[in-house]
Length: 155
Image 1 (tube, rainbow, N blue to C red):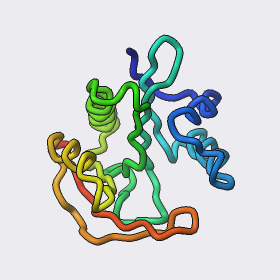
Image 2 (image 1 turned 180 degrees about the vertical axis):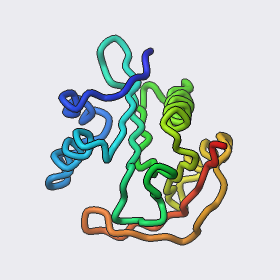
Image 3 (image 1 turned 90 degrees about the vertical axis):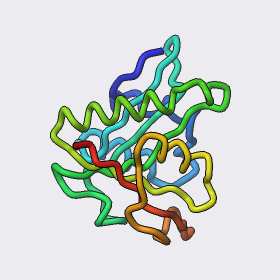
């Protein structure tokens, strides 16, 4: 298992983990964001196949408080294929993301977790995330998403 930065030209391969094609323009928006460094994506690769991803935004217009340029990034996607879950891949992706942020001078990481997603919340709290803002909401692909914003201070 190898964790590395996603080359933008391999973005399409993430559709097995999370089908971006179901939302209009989402895949192209992500490609542009990767190319302009507005998004950082780490992937877990097993024998040439992506089995997990972690994506962070360095800019975020939807939740302005979630990002402060050169200080705070917003983790918007942590996904692992079902057959690879509960093997430490999500934790390894998070640890790699923290290390990368520290190397780049970022010292706060935020993440939105749906209020009813207890499994994800437990993972993030085990990694040191704490509540930052409760009862947030944003429109995602035409639907309102309710979540809490958690934060991890890296130094």
